[in-house]
Image (cartoon, rainbow, N blue to C red; front, side, top):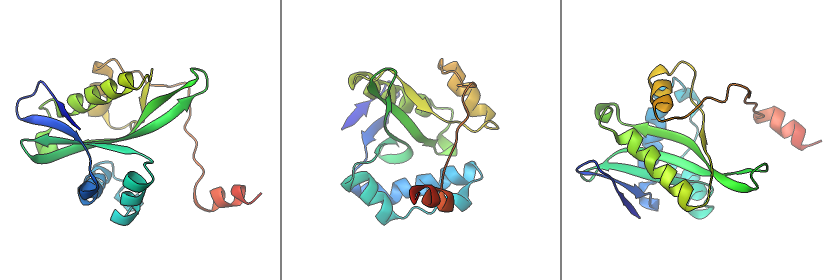
Length: 165
């Protein structure tokens, strides 16, 4: 599916299986920006299986003319309080050379449209505290930080140990 935007020569489309290498490249570029490249262990095979066989997440590709310049990876989460699914944005990335053109806002706008069309009432994501440009950008859109909540994570040996209890 192709989403038209108000920005000339810019479109957003749903990712296809042949985009797997591109998606992994964008993930790696985002990880470098976030100083987390050492945490990227995803492979094309794992991404292809997760995205296009198991349908565990979805990806939108941002394009300037026909050149991919960014992506958004998202999936449904569920609010028990609302009793319905919502969207969770895992990653949003725009090539540094293309920032400031409205592409990030267009990607978020497209995600908001998808959320509304699917009956979702929320679009959630995390942002690193030190990433002031993104914090300012998100706040300018009306997003609010959820400062009353702390994110917890189980992984690796701790996850396996708890799963074996």
